[in-house]
Length: 335
Image (cartoon, rainbow, N blue to C red; front, side, top):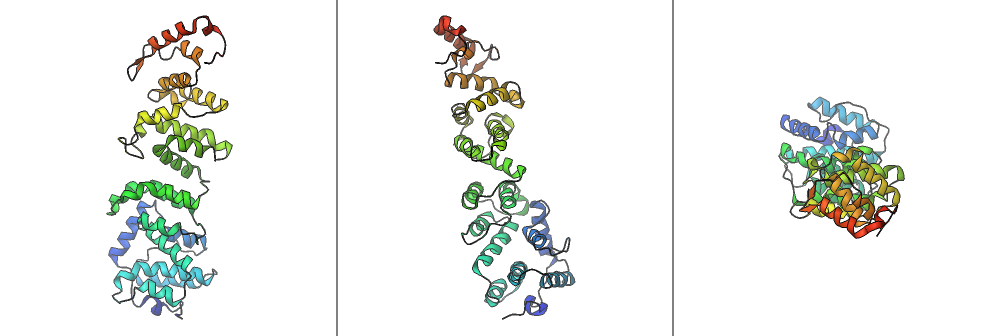
């Protein structure tokens, strides 16, 4: 078996070229300043700030030495070296790819091999390949929230690093979530996923919110409302021609809110941040009509003089008042 401590035997005279270093740095920038290889080094307590990518042969030698002299397990060392050899494999013009030959030589377990293949692809923004590997059932999820955040936020950065965006990239965050079930403990990751899911399906997002701890639910409900009504976030998610804003709004007003949620949503749209959203008052009125709260409809003052999709609210309210007759003065009358 190959002696992984033998630098020359492992790397066979190969080094990181200036072009390769520049390419990796571009990926680093797109990933927010840190690759997942660097996260692995931190997780395994291998020190060396800015050790990757190694810019000179000596820096590669030093990084290798830090890896092989660390206190982590042998298979972890194999994984890290395997990753580095994947970087260098295109320079190795032999029948057997350098990294693959190394993995076979050290008998790297398939689950570790698959995991590193996935992280390496993720660091190069090859999301479909990454998700295919990182959702393999043999893998223990590592960095699940960080991976989810990358899938959600880095899709729009692909052109900057000359990576072609695939048609399937839009569904990859959902595929990863369904397979791995990341905890979404980080609020920024949780909020990004809620925005993403809201753009795909309002009703499914509502039921997903109910799977979260109670203290998270109202902030997530606010995100669902914002993604549905706020003009600045339109066209996020599925194409508008497929899933129109009108369709989303109709789903929103038809959701089976609890009594507590009902009051919260109405207050958010009339007194809170949501009052500035386009059609906020109209949404409240539509919800009242959908729930049969006709006395509230008849007594509404916020929609005076307004129209929504050809509906004159004043005319509609007058009709409701006439229909209710003396019952409109009854507290809590519901159809």
